[in-house]
Each structure stands twice: as C-alpha cells, then as structure tokens.
Image (cartoon, rainbow, N blue to C red; front, side):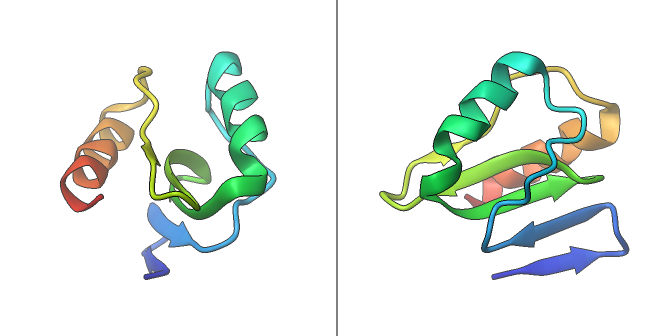
Length: 79
C-alpha cells in the first residue's frame, strides 16, 4: 500500500529516480534493481527498502540517521 506520513516516511509503487542519502554502493544496487522494483519505502526521500517483482525484500545495511534507522526497523517488521 502506498502511503505518506507527514513527509518523513512514505512508500510508492514506482521507484523514484532520486536516491537521497543512499551510500554509493547501495545506489549501484538500487539502480540495477530499479527495473524490477515494485514497491519502495522512502525516509526523507532516501530509498531505505524496496521489494522486487519476485517478492525479494532489500533493506540496505548501511548507516543512516537515527530516524532513518528506526524507519528501516519498521520495514523489517512490515516487509
């Protein structure tokens, strides 16, 4: 389900082109996965989790702000 929570946390069905604060190695992975992404969760416009068409869930294991880390924990619970 697509959603927005006062701008800090959102989810979309089509992957955004912007990668925000995603580290370079994860930007490469995100770009490679982009054609197959069916759902993306964003924290302050940074993709923090995405789901591929085959159901695989990707949650980058990289350091973000404290709030982004909390949002990723929510993704681990939801997805």
